[in-house]
Length: 209
Ligand code: TMP
Image 1: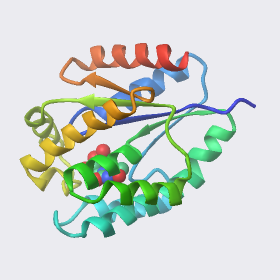
Image 2 (image 1 turned 120 degrees about the horizontal axis):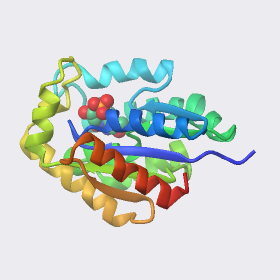
Image 3 (image 1 turned 180 degrees about the vertical axis):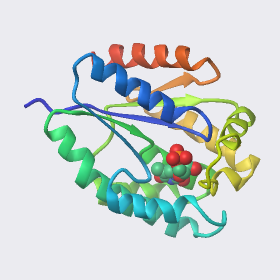
């Protein structure tokens, strides 16, 4: 059985990742592929419990290191229970956020040491990484406006302030520059349909799917 491909979507708040994950999932399913759609933090029962601790409550609820360890605790379980078994049986996994979010949010924006997180990633995940990462890029005012119009209580990171989100956006762009074989930046200011077309074209060109 040929191993499936692991595709991740990344980006700041309100960039439309969840919509694009769903549209790509529908497109690949229609084309006959076995697709697993999932998200981080969360994606498995125990990881979803950890998610609730991370995305609600006061912005300074966790120290940067404690927060990062919680993201990785959730990621280990998500990988072990959902992502790895799916890839092993030949399904393609489309995931809303993965390890680049930790590097962008906790390191670039939050100030945690990048080498520490790289080492933690190696300990927790070995060499596991996505085959393709689509980074949805949007000016932060537009992203925060879109995120604010969603009525949910998962606002812990949205409330971190403008400078945080500026560092976050630059962090994702820097990650894309440093891993050009894996990452593609997509202009998320376009319409949902145009972004989806760009996503499809990229997935087809990079992974032949
Ligand atoms: P979501 O809004 O895309 O579902 O993600 C939940 C929040 O968690 C979002 O504000 C980004 C944040 N996050 C991190 O800070 N680090 C991580 O490693 C992940 C996966 C998400």
